[in-house]
Amino acid sequence: MAADWLGSVVSINCGLTLGVYQGEVSSVDGAGQTISLRQPYHNGVRCSVPEVTFSAMDIKELKFLGIQNTVTKPSSGQGNATEPSFISAGHNGQSHKTTHSHAATNRFHSSTAPISIPRRGSSNSRGLMVPSQKRNCVRNGGAGGPVRSKDDECFGDGTNEDLDTDFDFEGNLALFDKAAVFSQIDGSNGHKAQRHSTQAELKPQSYRHNENILEGKPVVYRQITVPQHGGKDYCTDSGLVVPSIPYKLHKRLLEAAERQGLTPERRLEMIGVCSSQMALSLLGGPNRLTPKNAHQRPTVVLLCGPHTQGAQGISCGRHLANHEAEVILFLPGFVKMKDSVTSEVGLYSRSSGLQVASVRELPVSPVDLVINCLDSHENPLLREQSWYQSAADWANRNRAPVLSIDPPISKHPQIVEAKWTLSLGLPLPLAENESRLYLCDIGIPKLVFSEVGISYHSPFGCKFVIPLHPA
Image (tube, rainbow, N blue to C red):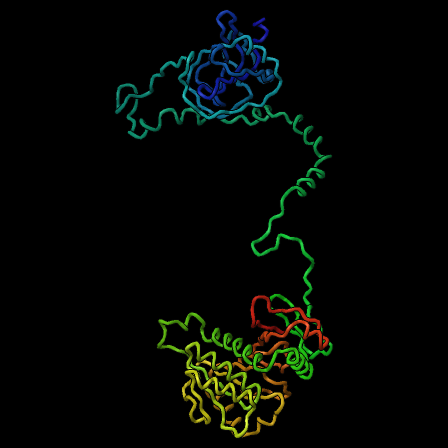
């Protein structure tokens, strides 16, 4: 029975310590429980000994490779055989004796070829005898061979002996059962699309830190509609469209708010807070207005006229002075002024700000910010007066950045060139210039907008002053 397996090509797995051996069965001893391989390969490398014997206690797995046609039997008394076509990674130079049991013999009928290549390990194990090989040379020029360097003695032993052995690609490819793999691929192609769609449905969707995980309705960017369009559309940073309105509709909106309790005094205070907050940001904010920076207080000049826009500027100046800014108010000595202007001047005089009535008393050197409130919606003829002309000329000569609060609609360019423009509630269709437009929330309720025919949704979000861009 044992003679039937002579000449078969087998693979013997002896575990991680001894590794994997492959070769042609040369003898099987049932009584001694040993098996011998001719022309063996150890972990894919040709062994230097012609034959290896294994004991049954060291055999972990034995596989019949079934490629005997690649092995030629010795002929005419010669003991050499052609190299078998199988190989894997490993080392050589050792002679082993080993055996296989009856349980291992039952695995001979396996027709599978895959071999798991374990990592290289020590060759000392139970039942394995490794004869010591004589060195071809003796240390430091002995009689046995040439002189070897210290590095060769320490690291070079046995490293270059098998470099001339070529890797048998054809034999290694024969171990791969391509027919079984391709049949498995063909059988799974029919369910590939369905399985892919199922995995896509089960895969959880990932979101960014600024994305909402809850499904919502699509965003409507035009949330404000007006009965009378001003002719220009603006948009916020988030893309919401803010239409402009003509001055008559803007005036009706303020009158409706006043009837509902939003008095001019409350509106002035709201405008003063928002405009002063914007001015403080333009002046540097917390980077400049700190207790440790008291020697570099910003200087702000307010140019105001005897009207509602002037009262708004005075309210802004009072809040700036309360925040330790050096404020200078220019207001000519008019005989008669509106009550709102008189009350705001009285409050401003209680602050640390200065008030001048002549342009000659204004600073000659450039200041940090100029706030322009000279223009009026109701009386455009103020531009022709001397005090207006002199104040506008001083602002243009000073070369300081200008913030214009609630400027009127005019076909003519502004005399004082503004860098920033602040509109109230809803923007007016201002003339095209290089000024950056901002919008201020003055606290008008939503129902007041609907009273004048405006469908309104607040575009301000968490802020009271937002920038607007041409749509």
